[in-house]
Length: 217
Image 1 (cartoon, rainbow, N blue to C red):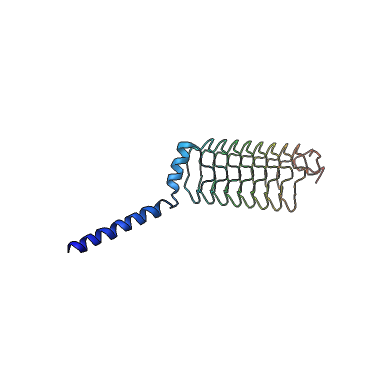
Image 2: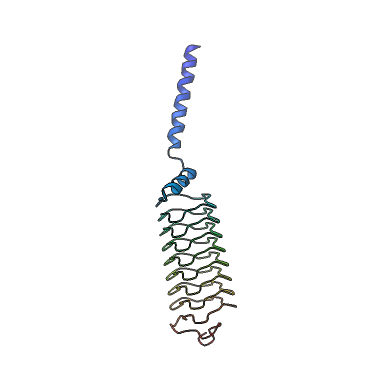
C-alpha cells in the first residue's frame, strides 16, 4: 500500500511538472496585455484575437506586432508606433489612432468605422477591403497605400495625402476629399458619388475647381 501511494505521488509530481513546463510556452494574451499596459512596449509580440477594448494604449510601441483579428474597439492608440504591425481583420471601430504611425502596417479587411485617424501615418499601408465608413482621416498620409476595395463612405479625408495610392474599386460616397492630394493615384473603377473634391489635386497634378472635379474628370 505504501509503495502504491509513493508511486501515485511520483506520477502526480511528474504530471504537474509537465503541465508547468508546457504552460511556460503557452500563448497567454492576458499577460502580454498586462505587460503592454505597464511598460507601453511590446514590439513584435503576438496578440492574435486579443481583447483590448476600452484600453488606454496611447504612445505604445507595437511595431511589428501581430494583432490579427484583435478587438481594439474604443481604445486609445493615439501616437502609437504600429509600424509594420499586422492588424488584418482587426476591429478598430471608434478607436483613437490620431497621430499613430501605421506605415507599412497590414490592415487588410480591418474594421475602422468611425475611427479617428487624423494626421496618422499610413504610408504604404495595406488597407485593401478595409471598412472606413465615417472615419476621420483629415491630414492623414496615405501615400502609396493600398485601399483597393475599401469603403470610405462619409469619411473625412480633407487635406489627406493619397499620392500614388491604389484606390481600385474603392468607394468614396459622400466623402470629403477637399484639398486632398490624389496625384499619381490609381482610380480604376473608383466611385466618388456625392464626394467633395473641391481644391483637391487630381491624378494629373491639376486642381479640381468644383466639388465634382468636373473640369478634370
